[in-house]
Length: 373
Ligand SMILES: *Cc1c(COP(=O)(O)O)cnc(C)c1O
Image (cartoon, rainbow, N blue to C red; front, side, top):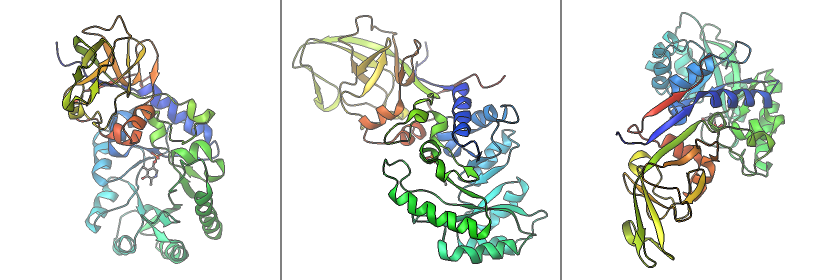
């Protein structure tokens, strides 16, 4: 028997979540953000599943963070447009941008100069990135009209101009600062008659005013709820990844005995402890506290003791049927349909779903289901 830990990827759930994103923003196009290997789910498999949607429902374009990520998609046979969210990292990449028919963000003066000095056979679609308040990437709002004018005056280099900006606090219940960012961007878009793209997952789910011509959902496609306060739209998301393993050892311990490194968890009653094949060497977060939920036989079972590299331990005292070989779901959907949302696990690890999903390490085999009709 081989090690039982796998990441099951439900491509039908991915398609459901993408269609759900589109339904939240019916007047907008929806870029599918599949950077970071589709948040750890496998970018080629995810892109193929989304490209296989009927023409009216499939993503008009994908978005990634680097040329290498775009190359992987092209090598995997993905033909749809792909936007480089941060554009190029050096001028020499422009040849590949052209050869692979990519769209590029332009966020800095040096990128603008490099593009305007380049002589492509066909102009490159450009999404001008604006710093509307997050202060991470993009041109200052005041500089945008002039940059826009220079791009518009270079039809051999740039085509299909769009305006893009990113919200710093779209997941928060109070949209105060987001609103200031939105007002700045709407004024620019109106002045330049430019198509606008602002909304990440939380804004796609909770803020129709911010939808604009394009939305850019990422984490919601994978079934994580990005909202501080869930709403009816976010509750309809389906988990795409299920991280599942099995119990590989069982023992009974007496009150006062401890489990694992540092004796962090101490039994308060006669306890049955199950050892599970999954650890931080697989990407399960070592910051998980005692009580972090898992699912065993459809029941919620708490982590008991520090996570080790290859194993973790859970307290199955209250689950009589738990035994060697029993399935354990670390996050996702159990065989009986019970769901343990990754957002809940992330809260117990003092982190966000994004780091758990992108942190699942290569030694965990991905197993794909559905997605191809
Ligand atoms: C990652 C990313 C997104 C997607 O964000 P989510 O919070 O995952 O929806 C959107 N836009 C940009 C520029 C990004 O880098």
